[in-house]
Image 1 (cartoon, chains in turn purple, yellow):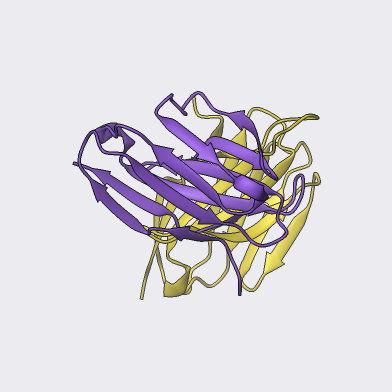
Image 2: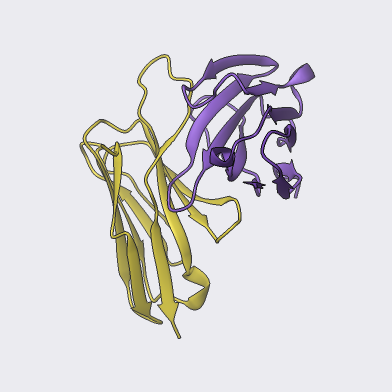
Length: 113
Length: 114
């Protein structure tokens, strides 16, 4: 079963450090979404890609966040100068086409000390 | 205000009992998705509903979308400990040029007592 995978699963970092997460979508899924989930809340949309093009960013995505999807395959989400408020679960989802099912990865749990 | 309201926030049921979780919006839902999440893990897809009045079932779980496409319910029959977890509804609320991102409710935490 080649589902969505995310690495690392857990990351602990000190405030001010940079972190990078990776998402490998289901092959042939051309849309890829990043969400953030904090305790007791549902996931919140951050950004999405159609193939390699980043088409939308939410207001939650500050200048310290950057995402890429080179060649339309895997995607990376980088957070620069991390803050304690960045502590959350970062989820990636991939979709084959418009308004089809979004399949989520296991998430990367970030703790900023 | 929350665009998608889920109720109840938490639920404790005895094994074998039936239960219903609701998801309500003031806006039309163009796609309604139900997911299950265990603590600290990703979301597991359960069902997707798109048409008003649509109903889908899988094993002991049934999901319905009302005719107006503003409310959905998830019903579990004869609950088992394996049903325990957080149930999330997510919806596509963007008509037309939608980028397809989902808006989620806060989730319903289900505990099943053996």
